[in-house]
Image 1: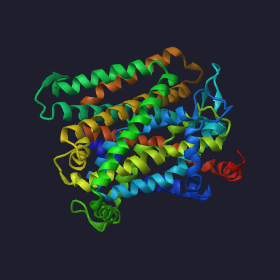
Image 2: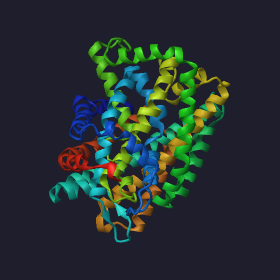
Image 3: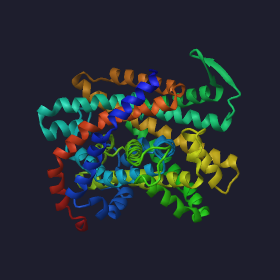
Image 4: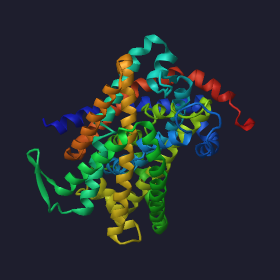
Amino acid sequence: MTFGEIITNIDDFIWGVPLIVLIMGCGVFLTIRFGGVQFRRLGKALKYMIKNEEGGDGDISSFAALCTALSATIGTGNIVGVATAIAVGGPGALFWMECAALFGMATKYAEGFLAIKYRVTAPDGNKLGGPFYYIENGMGARSKPLAKMFAFFGVCVGLMGIGTFTQINGIASAANNFFDGENGRQIALFGNSYSLVTVITGILITLFAALVIIGGIKNISKVSSVIVPFMAVLYILCTMTIMVTNIDKIPAAVGEIIEGAFGLKPVGGATVGGTIMLAMQKGVARGIFSNEAGLGSAPIAAAAAKTKDPVRQGLVTMTGTFIDTVCICTMTGLSIVISGAWKDTSLEGVEITSAAFKSGLPLPARVSEFILMASLVFFAFTTILGWSYYSERCLAYLLGKRSCAGATLAFNIVYIFAVFIGPYMTVSEVWGIADIFNALMAIPNIIALLFLSKATAKQTKAYRPETE
């Protein structure tokens, strides 16, 4: 059995019915317990997103904290992840991705709320928070092993999952497809032949990432606050253009998504039940990868926000899932289904989305390819930055009093090295490893969210934004 087959088997086992029920069930339960806060307060949340709180206590503004969180969520999941989900699970995967996102907004709200409620102040004055702190301080000292478990898997996700391999692999693939689609320029490296473009891209991204990462959270938030809003708007405009120019195809695409979601149109000869399970599995897994609802990453950034109100920050935090999945992933998925690119079995990963852009945008194919490549490069680059901070915070919690500047520097060097080797791994291995660690990181966080939901619900229902 090959390494890739082992990863696939582990991935399929972990992302089985129990975990899907746990993640989706958590979102549904919290939605009911919080009185549908993500629907009732979405307008207020979007307003808070761009209006920073006055007199708040923290390291960076709420908007900067959101951009840091978005920098870690808006990445290859929105472009490559959606494509791989639809390619394997069929168009129905997009439906389950949206379901996971809508209920996941309640999950993300709880994460942002608890991040502020249980954050602590470090000796240097910086605000620290995240699942390890609300697990330990909210659930009690006996739950510290659960907090350590979360922190350990958080480091693994950063080093071998969302933070490094998948992002740089997606960037290198996009750059190679654009500059050397025929793989005409090869170079021998690590005993294999690789495209010269892939090698150069990997080196450049590694160097740029190192320059920002060494500067810490303030450098990361500054870069993210500029890149994320600009690229998100540009990408949404492009996908909206595809929607408008192919508006006559949207009803059929929506029908195809619904049919695939409920097994009315089997994919690849699978049975009806198998089709539903496959669409749900890939949709939920890629949805969690993209928006990170329930994963426990966003509250690490949210804890640094300048705010004194847990409810307000919870609302701001949940807009990340709305922007990431409900907006960006939906448009990517519709573009792919409309174009039919997902049916071409010769295409893989970013190639599927690239084909959708080339056929859907009323622009020369070369221009469409460039726009997609640029979007992927910037989205994935900021994800590398965001997750360097997340995994660094997880490591600091694991080390406790032993944490020091030397340990942080050593970790950053290892993290940057992981970015460097990412382009030389296969797409299936990269996404399989990411899915596995995502699941393992999510489990202790979801347990904490459910355990602390009563206190969260009580303060949420007592909140009166009209008095502000």
